Amino acid sequence: MSRLGAILTGDPFDLRGGPDVTAMLIQNVNPMNVCPDLNKVRRGFLREDLFVAVHEQFMTDTAAIADIVLPATMFLEHDDVYQAGGHAHIQIGRKIVEPPGECRPNHFVICELAKRLGADHPGFAMTEMEIIDSTLRASGWPGADEVVEQRWLDVTPDFETSHFLKGFGHADGKFRFRPDWTKLGPYGDRMPEWPDFHDIVEQPSAECPFRMLAPPARHFLNTSFTETPGSRKREGRPSVMIHPEDAAASGIAEGDRVTLGNARGRVTLHAKLFDGVQRGVVVVESIWPNAHFPEGLGINALVGDDPAPPNGGAVFHDTHVWLKPA
Image (cartoon, rainbow, N blue to C red; front, side):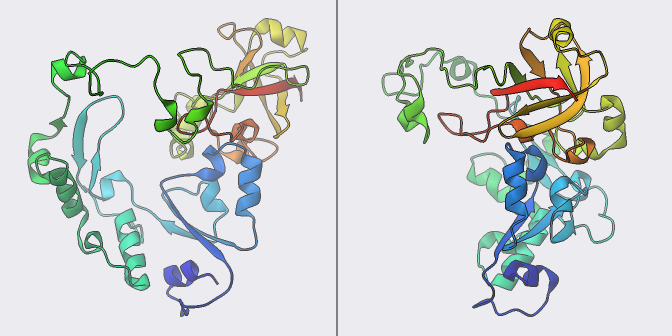
């Protein structure tokens, strides 16, 4: 057993020695579903020398491949602070109900690990609300109690700042059409010197004549939603949107099983004819669990893991594929 396994299960283990095993604790993410190049990800998780503990609300693809699964609380069962993308408000979600069974919050699991490892940090002795309060105050905002009382905190910059009437974030206040990309990310040296089209996407080829986009489906904001019966019912099944003329040229009709593939792998799903996509482009709205695909891996098996400049990140919309009837 690995060190993390012994810590989580309470089994005796000498932390000074032990087998040559790498241990991983996963919270709030489902890499066996959302990561690009899923064949590579699966090979990594199936290594003999890797011990995986997953702290989850659902039996996701990652939880299913774990050595230990710890039940996690949902958002009504613990205190948390939220600042979502797309708006400039801070909100605090208070715990409303007790969690069922042995479900525990992230903070509890991290603190319990810290106790067993002898790790020392002020946060390990604080409650969730104490950490939220401390974080807000250290950031120059009112404390947690005040935010709860106000229901939310509007942190939108003033009109002049948000509209750059006072200039931009440089000493002279001027906008830069020629930024130094090397200072903005580890892959900045790959960016063009001046604003221009950056030709780094996977272009169609004789072997892979289609470009594939892989956005999330409307009812699958993240893979937690794929675990709810309502969301699955609304989405129906994994499908690929194809322009009717491309479908006709490939001998594909509405609802047919089709296979997409490239050098990374292949994925089978159903055709949905839609003239709202461009010729030569296919769209696969996901992220369906892997088990819903005949090959056992979802659409991200076809997506590359090349880091996108300047800061890295996945290239979910830069994939070329071939397409044929299944």
